[in-house]
Length: 230
Image (cartoon, one colour):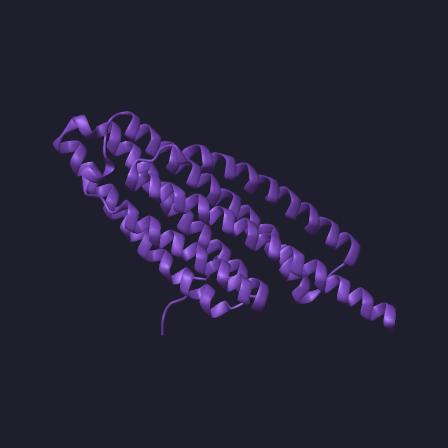
């Protein structure tokens, strides 16, 4: 009985360490995105180096967490909700790593724009607003994971539609700019790629939120059936 209790306690510690590592990785990705947003607004392209260096740490954490998950499954053979947690984590770290990659794309796009002597603010496009919304989604999704709160996760999922709508609006505005003044084409394309990266960060935050719902409730809501409303 004591051995069983000891093993159970050790298993709980292993799971808690995994969750902490995911939140540490998420915190790094959040700082990457925040730095990229700030660089877009301020032109501080020196932060690109920091974002790239942070990306290496994020990649290392992804590998370490995946390795820990594999060892935990082999050693502890978790079942039910514990198994959902481990599988959910393996999927979440993939989305976090990809969100970090998108932050790196934003930073490199910002560097190209400023090195060409352009200012994104001249275009009057709401990239910062959509980026802050996507960052808030990611933060809320991670908080939902920390609390294992499916209701909070579902708020993130609903918020993704607004980010998608704003992204489409930005693209329309930039196409208009390019049609009216061909000299803006190069910078407009860079801003579109930046906005696209932001939109993808929102998608990854939504995915993480969906994993939270799966972990807590066992419901896979990634591809809901299209049912006619009564």
